[in-house]
Length: 374
Image (cartoon, rainbow, N blue to C red; front, side, top):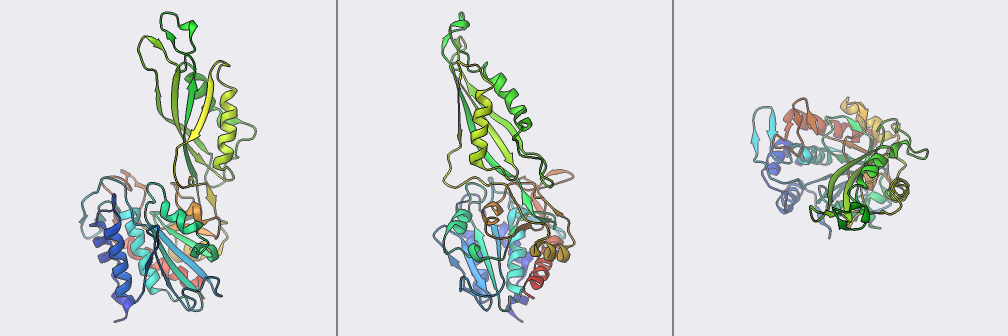
């Protein structure tokens, strides 16, 4: 029996789901490394906690001739951990579809594919659900396997569809400043909370600006959503301060820097002159996930769509594919779903993935890679 034939993606998935990875990915990373080693592959763990392994005639030779494909997904999950369950059809538990189901399919394809004269890299990241420190380190390093990739495939729950684009996600806080006064003499102060009304109206019209990003043909319009509000200190005092947190889901070609500049200009035109407006992005050590899109005619799209039989469409959530799409044609693919007809699946207490879909995803990935390495 060959090492490839010995790999059981469902057994690996069940073992991975039983290892909590919402606070520490160490146990799942160890499972992955031990699994690869048993199948004759020597993985490396870099300083950011990424697991990187390579197969093929040009393994380990950055810039070598031949097709180079990178397979990526993440091993961390959101809190809290959900206990593992299974029956004949599904595996349940936190990470079952986001993204340990996709991971099992990627590992199966990685071990089964024949890169011939090319190179196949498995790059598995931690911290996707929080700051994406692993993926950012992977993409930003001059030694990164992403830099000379011909295609990148990111494992996420897509229902076996091939996703070629996703919105970005920016988060920040609008701060309004007025002047305190006694509530009995409100005209003697400047009410920052009252100034929130024109700000909310301005957010509603933000997409109507002449220079607003056009509706994307696949992703639709960008969205701008107020999410958290705070202000005031005493019930008998005119409040001098008010804050509003917003969530921006961007579409190409908008960037975080461009969004910030036009937002402040738009808000300053909306509020009274005696109210000052400030906007700042939420502090984070990695860049926000920007909107991205891959040409639907790219070879990786055609190969994987033909193998899976799935639709070609955008992905419904922000993804680390944002960091990789700058360097190579990138798609998102995997078993499972963010939501089904009953409601939320990923990040929910009922998270599950169908066993048959995991096996089908692995087979489609292997077939798609065969077409790329031909």
